[in-house]
Image (cartoon, rainbow, N blue to C red; front, side, top):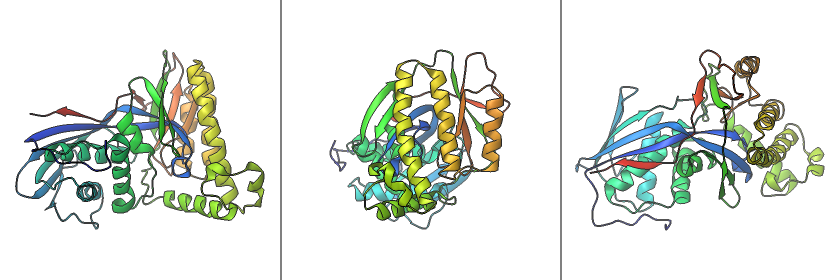
Length: 356
């Protein structure tokens, strides 16, 4: 598809769109460093029912929260907050991409826990975008263009300087596969996910994760400072032998990125070879790096990791931006999930569920 959505002869009266959340198996804080990651779309996600109203206004209803918002479709606000900021941002970015503004009633429901590090925000952005594009009769954006548009919503309307990982995983998710994403080339390679009795699960640390309010943006700024000090454009290009020249904590941030990229490809090899125990050990190594080098863990997260390992997990690590949220675990066959843990079921990518 082109970078701009082209208007067809007309829209539709209503459409239901769904976008999944994601769990990032491994490769954390690498996307904005042009590195590698290995996310999986999950069955839980966000559903948006978009109904044409013809009155030039957006009426958005977050049914799970019993909250609503209303604004002129051609006047989204950059001062909106919470879930409303995502809706305003999608409307604004679609207009900038050439998608006609349409009046619509949006009914939003979700099954991804908010603030869990499972990307409920990207699911909301993607589902709302697909719903409004279809409603307007626009040609669907290509997958990477749609992911970029939704990332701009997160960056410029919400204020979280996230990369493209969440959006690409939501758009391109494949059944029974993880996605090896190269964030320099945006090449996406499906990797077979044969669990054979093993289970992926998450357990809530009890500490709400929020990228805007956490140290996420600060970590991204630290990576930029490390690049400037090394004279490179991306930490992916860092020479390990030069990291000693960096002051702390910049050296630790750079070391995590380099090591995490390596762990992604080791995990891909382990999945292809059916070595799930090796995947578990790589999750543990990733968590240790995120804790000790990237400093995004918390006491609540550490207690949750310990609880999962005590329950028999082969590996466990903080997911998402860190600073709270859920912890991912790989549970071997025969093990029991601890109380409150949620098994994750791999899903497929974003799609239209229903239209007249």
